[in-house]
Length: 318
Image 1 (cartoon, one colour):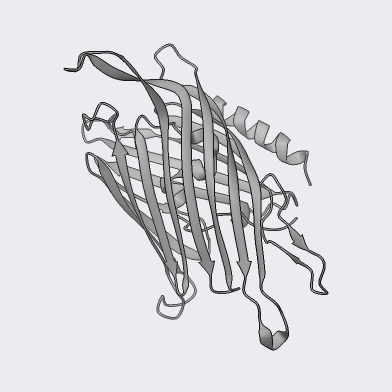
Image 2: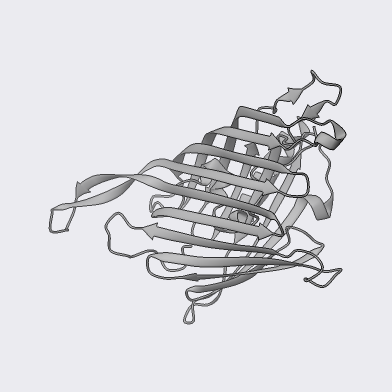
């Protein structure tokens, strides 16, 4: 618990030194926060012991979003016991790539972008099971706002760069991290009577989680975690800024809930095969039947590559 207290104090100190309204991009699909967390914190790229390629896709009425990502710890060849006489060892350098596409029907906006991340992992123990990592990513972002001829509103299109920074501490049982995303302010259009700003703002995130082993023989693990975030406005509302997440692992199966939106009931499932996993995420409105309001449905697929091509991954290391 000392790990979380120290990291949370750093997070609060960083946010207290800053002071735009907007949102995180990419915002959807929601489930990337569950399946590909390095998108929010570049320091987490390469924290797994394999190359992971992941795809998330989400649908909500006419709105849709997709993310394709990959991250790994870079490897090097060393002397080993394979027939070739060589094996692989992990370096301290991690890398990640992702691209996203998002269309929001409510305000007729289209967002897309690509990102490249790099991280450096420093061992905190001789056995190499605990690490602290630092990371950064550079992004190219695209925003298109459809116009409205009836209201004499033109379309607006923007291309702009951005940067993310992060710190991540992790071991087989716990993890915590802080990150700063969208460091650079987005462009504005002030040449027209109707001023327009791309609805993206600098965001500050804290993530932390812990795995409780409920049964070793049955491989049952409970993992509660939390995502806390705010922006330069320093506005902080419990239901808007704190997002708890609960996972229950039973062997290769995982079920859980994510409180990303307190007006909805959400749940997700994940099943891991030896070399890949499939996952789903659903969010249903609380205040009306699902057939009156569009439900959120998402799917995730990931392929996990071992450099030794043995198909082996550490038990419970998702």
